[in-house]
Length: 288
Ligand SMILES: Cc1ncc(COP(=O)(O)O)c(C=O)c1O
Image 1 (spheres, rainbow, N blue to C red):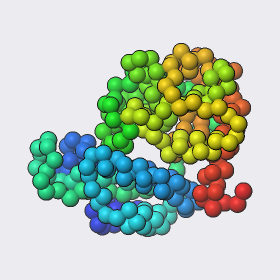
Image 2: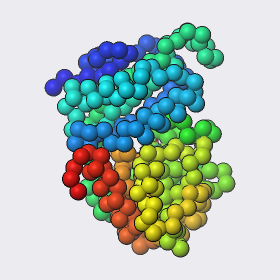
Image 3: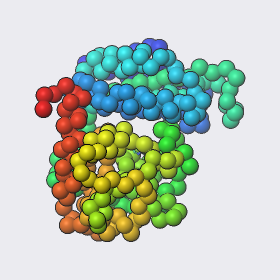
């Protein structure tokens, strides 16, 4: 089956899809992106993902390349053309093509690229034994709430994790507090049994999975604290886990080689994983 990408108004064969060399995304990372999961052919949490795209665009003063409704339509059409049952839609919007000059160009139309990808299954054992994370200094800029395509620190962090045989790198700010992973949000269950995750300021990307999980947890009788937690607190935690649209709720069982709690996925992470799976089932239209 041929694979298509959508580039600035046209569906193109994926292998031939291209943007201009003076696209500001290519030259300055002057753009934003969004990833919408697809499950059983349905878009999962479409609205919060498009809301976040709108916030990222607004923060950089990049206009929507076309209406939000049309963008969603194109996403669905790509999913259909590419025969995606389980996977994701990648949406990238840059400020557009203009002669290289740092300031905003007087005239540029935003560039829109959309692609799809099939789900890459995570190693089955990961959810059973839990993921290992390493910690690294957070060297990113101070607007991590914007889903910018400028991801070099994240790229270097993920590569460091891979080389260490870990799944993710948790980034630690100058004050010794964990911000988030390179492509995931970080959580702990502290010694008192409270669920703790960083508050959604400029230090982290407000994950759609993170927000969905917080909404699901409300009313479950679990105390939740959205606040910075230190590396020392994470090391002493009963449990830890991470969340993202592609990792869902993933238990973390080792930090920098030392076990978290029992060193096995804990009861809270396991229960929240099931709670979130039920949410995805509902989004995908699967009966409970
Ligand atoms: C830096 C960062 N934090 C957190 C997340 C998790 O966000 P979401 O739950 O919306 O996938 C991502 C996802 O790409 C990310 O890049």
